[in-house]
Image 1: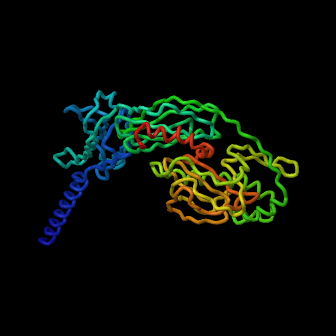
Image 2: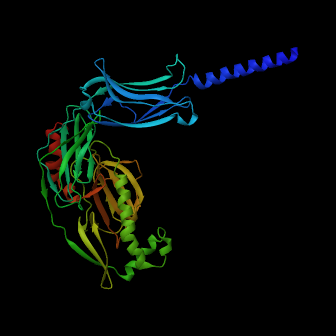
Image 3: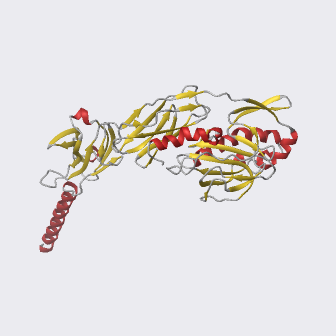
Length: 448
């Protein structure tokens, strides 16, 4: 009998302790809710900022969540939400995601320091029934004023397919800036306390483009500013090229390594090269030209290799085979014919950023001249430089050839601004370079 009583007592104690443990672990959970905010705060609040805040509570579930801004010892509520709770397991709220749109002016805030506070409380009976509380408090600077720029360059004569330099300054630091034209954007750089943007009028852009400077400050505010410019519409010639069987048989085997399924199909190979490979080549070049030295490396006008001009920038080409039109293209450079395997000089000071086989241009070299300006040398037979090498104007970088989509030995020379082809004739002209580039820098105090 005594043993039975002891046994029952032990069972009762175990049940009691288990009950206490169950109640404690389930109703007196001690872990606070988790809070995550995206995107991460940078320390600034602009005129408008959207956030996504995620709350998670693994134990008793969320009781309340919210966010507010504290400024001048006052609280300005952004949002607040409470959740009903039942002992039934399925009714507790364990996760909640809230998208918040913070507009300081709407909340009655002014520019200056403040705190952004995001909080959450759970349904635990811990802390005398108040539950576990989590709070993320961020020190922020409210800045709702959009940045402004003052354009220092007065003349901007822009030819379709041409290049332009604008110089500007801002009373506050800019983190992103440049010239926007329709769907094109040319990133600016900061040099010697001023901002510069070398931009282009893309050859394939609409007849009338709207150019403007766009900028963004540290807080994320965005501003726009216009400037005076004059658009020049040059004339581009049209050219008819007859594709012969001898050309196809001589050149198309070079591309069968790229298109092995077209081996033996000469005309089909040309059609593929002139469309798909040409587009791939231009895309690769544009990608290469997105990273550049943020200050000028070039010195004066660019050097032109000696030789006769065989094709010019912007030529609209139509290809015919046995009297039938089979394709078109636009020639985005100047073809210079000289003696076979003629030495090719670097057009100006810069850094070699590409050396290798480059689609329709065959063996090619691309040189970074700073400010987003690049020169391209195509159809080479051999190289004398390597990627990363610094070159001076006139240094021999390779020899002419007929690699790629070339009908004979010559140099294809292109100039590009952030991957957009521009007319090399401008950069060969010392008067144009002086008036449109160097004099602007001198007047702004960037050059002696």
